[in-house]
Amino acid sequence: MESQLVEMCMESATQSRDAVEAWRRQRRTLESMPSHLAEALLHRLLRRRLLFPSLLEVFKFCVEEIDLRGESCVDAEWMAYIGAFDHLRSLNLSDCNKINNSAIWAITGMTNLKELDLSRCSKITDAGIRHLTSIPILEKLWIPETGVTNDGVILLSSLTNLSVLDLGGLPVSDLALDNLKVLRKLQHLDLWGSEVSNKGASYFKWFPRLSSLNLAWTKVTMLPSLPSLACLNMSNCTIHSSFEGEGRKAPLAKLILSGSTIRDVCEAFQQLETSSLSLLDLSNSSLNSYCFLPYMSAISDLDLSGTSAGDESVEHIAFIGQNLRHLNLSRTKLSNAGLEILAGFVPNLETLLLSYTAIDDYAIPFMSTMPSLKSINLSGTNIRGVVNEADFDPNCISSLSGLCNLDHLERLDLEETRIKDSALTPLPSFRKLSYLFLRSGSLTDTSLHQLSSIRSLVTLGIRDGVLTNAGLIVFNPPPSMRILDLRGCWLLTEDALLSFQQKHRQIEVRHDLLSIALVKKLSIHSSSSQVTSRTKIYKHKQGGPSSSPLRSNRGSFLDQRLKYTREELFALGSASAPNSRDNVDLIPHVLANDG
Image 1 (cartoon, rainbow, N blue to C red):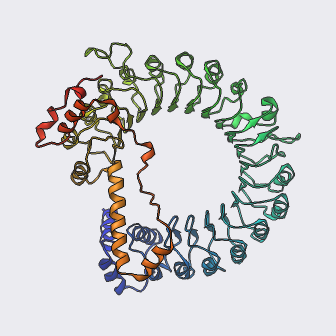
Image 2: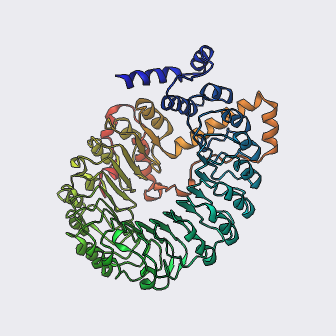
Image 3: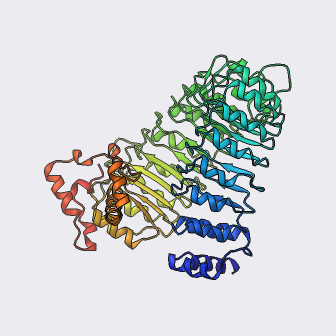
C-alpha cells in the first residue's frame, strides 16, 4: 500500500513542467526525503526531460547517487550545481560529450565522492586528471576512451584508495604501470588496447588484491603468478602461457580468450587451476583441439562460437556436460550427429546457441532430451519446421512439436530460416514462451493469428513476413506483449501501424516506416524551433547535415516483392487495403498457400 502511495506521489510530481514548478515553489530543498526516494524522483524527472540545472539545487542535501550517462545536455552549468551535493557518493557521466576539464573542476575536493565514471568523455585530458587528484577518497574510477595520455595516467598514483581503475583504450605504457604500483588496494584493472608489454605485466604482482584483469588487444603474451586473480580477459592476444613461474596456480573463475591466438594449448593452461573455472570463452580463437576440456569439469558457461569445433569436439564437451548451463556453438562445424552425441549429457543446460550451423529439423528430437532448456537459438540453420519434403501436405507434423516437453523454454530464435505458417502450430502450447523471433518471407497473417494464443509472449518478432493491414488490424496481442517487431513487412502501411500502436499503447511497434516517420517528425519539430531562434539557424548553417540514430537501416531491408508476379502483387495490394474487419478472410491465394 505504501509503495503504491509513493508511486502516485512520484507520478503526480513529474507529470508536467507546471507540476514540477508547483512543488518547487513550496520547497527550496528536499532535505528530509530519504535518499532512495530522492534519487528515484531525480531520475524520473531526467527521463521525462523535466530536469534542468537549477532544479538540481533542491536535491543537494539528499541524493547520494546520480546517473547521467549519455545525457548530451549535461555541461559545466549542470556540474556547478552537482558540485554542491554534500552527500554525493557516486556520479556517472559516461558518454556525456559536453563534459570537459573545466566542467569537472566543480567536483574538486568533494568529501564523499567514491565512484566516478567518465567513460568516453573525449574532452577529458590530463588537466582533468589533475582536478581529480583533489578527491583522495575515490575508490572507483572509469576513464576509458578519453583524451588522457600516459602522463595523465601517472598522476593517478596519488589516488591510493582506488580499488577499480578502467584505463581501456588509453596509451598506457610499461612506465606508467610502474608508477601505479603504489595502488595496493587495486582489485579491478582494465588495460584493453594499451601499450603494455610482458615487461609491464610483471608489475601486476605488486597488486596483491587484484582479482579482475582485462588485457584484450595488448601485446602481453604471458603473466606472472597472480594467486588472487579470479577473472582474466586476454581477447585478441597471442598467448604463449597464461601464467609463468612456480608459484601458486591462479584460481580463475572466468577466462576470456575470444579471438586469441594460442600457440600451445598445454603450455597455455599449464599454470591454471581449473577446478574453479566456471566460464570459458574461446569464441573466434585459433584453437582446433579441445582435449583439455575434460579437465575443466566445473565449467558452467562455455563459448566456442566461430571456432573450428565440429562433431568430433562434442565428445570432449559431453565430459563436462553435467555442470553446463550455457553453451554457444554458433558458427561452428556442428551437425545433427554432433548434437546426438551431446543428447543426454547436459541435464542442466539452460541456453543452447546453434545459429548458423548445419543442423536441420532432424536435430530437434535431440534437444528434447535437454529438460532444463530456457533459450534456444536456431537462426540461420536449415530448420524448416517439417521433417518431410512434402511440406505442402496439410497433415504434415511440425518438427517444432518436439520441443513441447521443454517446460522451461522462454526464448526461441528462428530468424533467417525457411520456417512457414504450418510449422508454428505447436507454439501456443509452449506455456512459458516469452520471446519469439522469426524472420522469413513465407510467414503470413496466419502466423500472426496463431501466435496471439501464446499468452506469456512479451516480445514477438516477425520480420520480412508477408503480413497485411487486414491481418494486423484483427491481431489480438497477448496482454503481456510489450514489443512487436515487424521490420521488413513491406505490405504494411504507416496508417495501419500507427492505428495499431494507438490501440495498443503498451506495445512498442518496430517497423521501417515508423522509424522514417519519427525522423520526419523530429525534423519538422527542429525546423519550427529554428524559425524562432536565430542562434539555432546560425548553428544549423555552420554544421553539416545531422545523422539521426533513428534513421532506418535501409541496407538491411529485404524487398519481398521480388518473389511475386505483377498479377500477384495486385492481389496483395487489394488485401492490404481493408474496408472492414472481415477482410482477414480475404487473404489472396498466393498467401493462403503455405508454400
